[in-house]
Length: 353
Image (cartoon, rainbow, N blue to C red):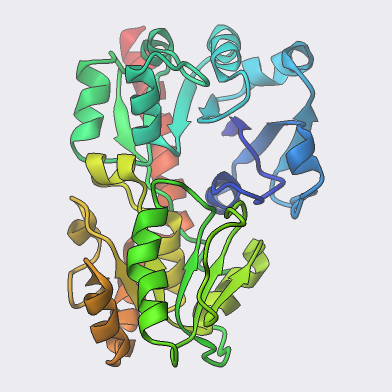
């Protein structure tokens, strides 16, 4: 089949988690014999930070505004499905155009709890309530009760979980020497920062003999980083596996909206686990459905939990998490799910006819 994707970014992983998600999913989808066209809005903040300008497993093209999308109308109309992502610039207008032009449309929400919070506040930055019934499927990074809410309250014809995943070819133990005791990889977010303070910065102050690292952009200059916390401003995906492999433990910190919704795994969970790095995480509903507490992940509420974990050896936990991810959460698993959702829409259309 042919799939057209209108997403935030495929070309640049700078300051967003969308690029790595799309890369893993769409590469695996293409490996299944499908054709993929990714249309990305050409914006300066990504244009100057591109780390994948010419993928060999899909076509990547750029458009400068809504008027240029019309040049792609014939390909969009001929595609088996068109998928619009969250946070696409002018996403409401893009979505309306896609629904008018395409045979079948899907909305892929990589930020579902954030999206729903925005809708509740009347903030229709990239999705409006009237668009949701027009998407044949609402594919969500969040599962659980949120799927029922999307159908019952917002009128989605079908809400399905399409969690993030990991490219198992790119994320695996590299043999890098252990350099840090605990690391965190993620863009700065104000609502994640208190948890990062509690589960990494405070432990770092209390354990000056331990080594820590925080990688990711946009952290304010006034953060008081302890001397034993190494800051890495931007770590491109090519360096992630080495980063995790060099970490005794990796920290997972979840945004407040995701905690409230539950069932919202971040990509760093799967990526760190694929590298067999033991994970320390905050708590939220649904997490223990993905990883068994104490056997495949360690849940931490405060600095004392972190200190206790760092004092022990959790290599077995890292290996168990790796086995779970490789069995259930690779990009190949997600590509199969995406294929089934598109086929499901096609079957529904045939039955309706």
